[in-house]
Length: 312
Image (tube, rainbow, N blue to C red; front, side):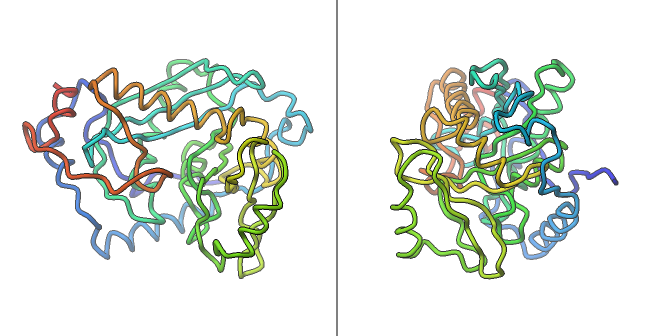
């Protein structure tokens, strides 16, 4: 099989809190509200190219074991914005032991997002930072590389069947699971009265129902992840994993509503922002609880004051 390459993915202009030139920071602060049509066409072609590499079946022995015997490490990724800044963010990767779900590795970096958020193209805004984090882990501590990655977003449950979980899985060649908090209404899927009634009938943690698109394809599963949470998660295949195994493992990684790898990545990215800048972090656009990102306060070189301080 040919090796997939990142292609048109957005690049980082500031790799961490200590290094970036002024030109890169100024460019990052001038992110357009929406890319031109030719850029969207390029992104669509790139998604179509990489989609050919997606594997939607179990590829590892542990995936087929009822107790996931042989699975020892699960990972999660997250991007949190600097509060009051539409460009500055913290990208995080965490690795947890399984089944204990204790954090054994974390990597948090301040980054500048050079592409705007556009529904259906989240990967072109964020995935390069996640790929870089996996690369650093492989170089520094290869024995801690996760055997599966949880992504706060969709996999094949997507406008073109290639969401951020697929994108990350193909580029890292790791099994990936997409876990979204809101239903992406594609291929005839709707948050209708019937859909809400199906959710109401999910009585206990682990209960689920298939998300059948208008095309007749099962795009994912609505999962009640915990007894004490009535809001479902929307689980879909990212890469190198069957939907059945993805749903079972997602449920098995939930101490609360959100799978622990994603929850810890979110907690630690926000904590890193607070420790580094002394201010809070917010979920990136496209994620639950996110609001339209505010305009950055101009500081040196056109970047927000808080981010400029962190990068100085």
